[in-house]
Length: 483
Image (cartoon, rainbow, N blue to C red):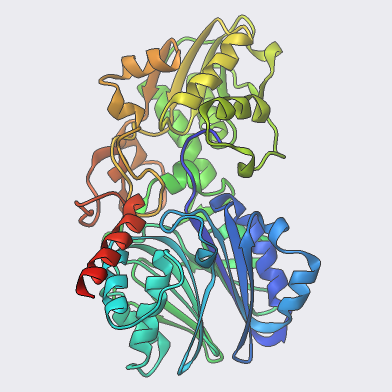
């Protein structure tokens, strides 16, 4: 909405030892994961090996009606997905879960993340005669698994083999006729956890908040590189690809995850408060009130207030009834959207020195508009504090910061220059060192490549990930030359 970061995707799966209304549980869980993807969503249900699915563009309540849920029927397994496209664009064939029928049965896949070698995998299969219907990297994962399944004793064995070839970020769910399989890339770029309902159903989700929604108790996080298979015989774990230090995206704590989620043993809400506390210690400033930009800036603002003893206040009211689809491409329309979605409480701002906390500044244009709203409301001074370091590098692993071209931290030479451009009296970012201290209870390392340019695995050198479809066009031209 504010020309800032967008989420990746969210996945949820459930396995019951009986036939029941599993679609309903997935539907409720997708509501809890809606913040991770607002472009499209879908559910696939397994009833004794027969798959039913419903997918579409839009928010969960728009795509799923009482009638569409009824048509999905009952089953003992189901997986669901909410999507924000990082690779593939708005192609209806990219809406997940993806379902494939092959000689050994049905297979459905839901994926959160971004592969950096998806185009190469696709090229290999297309040269072998495979036909792809969409442009997402998830389809490359599905074809890879099916190809290995034809030579393997089980789907989990096929997954184990495929993981040697997949490069990048993937937290995946695979549903077969008899099993629910969850697996996570060896770096653990994005979260994946499992739980169990009081009725005995096992569930797997991108975030623990989805477990709460369906009344499931948290069991544990799925380890980076781990393959978990849930079937009639219970839960089995394959740790062939485990053992690395990991590279969890630090922005899961700063922005992506819901505040009530717990990731790798650490509360997201507490991590954001700690970010604010670190900001107050690193970049103090005299002021009368601390406010946060809804929603992810609120907890950091509370932490800044506690550490600085400057009163916390509500500066903005957010209109929760405006979806992303409202936004139109032009900058003028984006600025109008800011006024519609955020309204300043003038009585709290007028005549005061204000510290405004936000999670990030990406391009800076909409941030400048938010600052002007405070000026118009009578703020005496506006000091901005950002609960992350400056964005200077692309992300290749599931976030839509795919190029340095439009990043304000790359366009401006100094923080002072950025401050002048967005119209604040002072500006400070959280240090990179502090981001590694946000999560209190995890031993995992973090990926901070978008800040430092140092990635846990080798990043692609040819082109940013948003050029995936351009790469496909290049391959198409290559095929034409062969013809």
